[in-house]
View: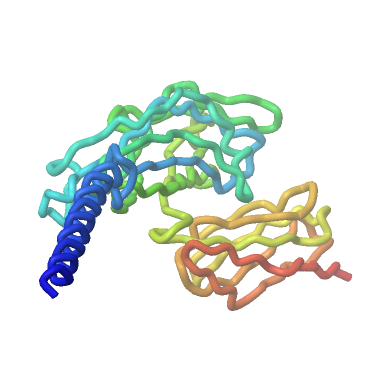
Length: 291
């Protein structure tokens, strides 16, 4: 009987040693695993540029730099003042000249891709050079940038980044509202109209509407209207009639399709629902021909 008790105690001791060893091994292994994201504790942000088109042949802008405002999570300040709190971070940008009119209907270009510390991000600033031009009637004109913009053009934006998270930020550069012709001098002036939004993922704050308009030769402009306000517009593609309106807040929209000439009638599609992080794809829109 004593021998049996000894064997039971011996087995329990062996089991305890095994369990203790397994716990130690698991603890050591967990040191190599970061359940909150990559080992370096960074988040990743891609910043892309797209455009709402204007009635020009080209609108070329020289992008020199891009900055974003940062405050760490350890900072208790929720309502951040970028002029007083946190710090500005220079995002990596290869200076480039971009024709905005090539960035329509879902086309965008990558401005910057960077690993960033977790925290709150509250505003972007786009810095442009002086080599900006607009083409009208096959003539290239200088686009004068007002002085005093060394700190960059402010773009309202806010999001939070956790370690291991990756998101895409879209900057929408509205060419049609950014280019102005001076009355007396006839010179063209660039006053950028910009907005930024997260388009996909859990933190998406905007959606989109896409579709096609037929016939293609109607060359229509497509407007997204909420209530009495025109929120966004684009020209349907001259090849296939396709269009995409991006950066739309969640809600209901009417779509107004306005042909370029008098051959086809203006058409309105009502009650189109947009959800954040989603693309609402419409059936082909067929324009009626005027009699």
